[in-house]
Amino acid sequence: MDALTLEQEALKLPPLARIQLAELLYASLEAERDQEWEAKVSTELNSRWEAYQKGELGSSQGFEFLDRIESRAPSQ
Image (cartoon, rainbow, N blue to C red):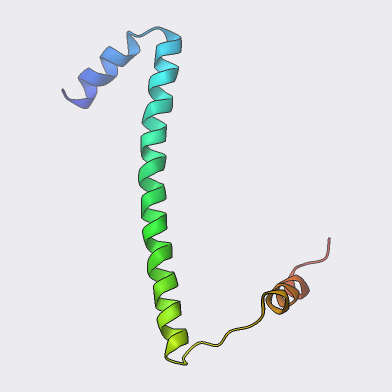
């Protein structure tokens, strides 16, 4: 079934059914995006871990890091 036919059939549905269909379609896109994001984050984390193990990247204590970030943030 092509997209145009699918659209025409979907528009024949009652409003509540169209809303449910839209939510299902949106959720399917969101799941794909989440998988892409997780893959990118995993790649970045692995890269940083390898750099740390090779001595190419340093580390800091969690609270020290948070203090540095807070000092750079604009005052509110």
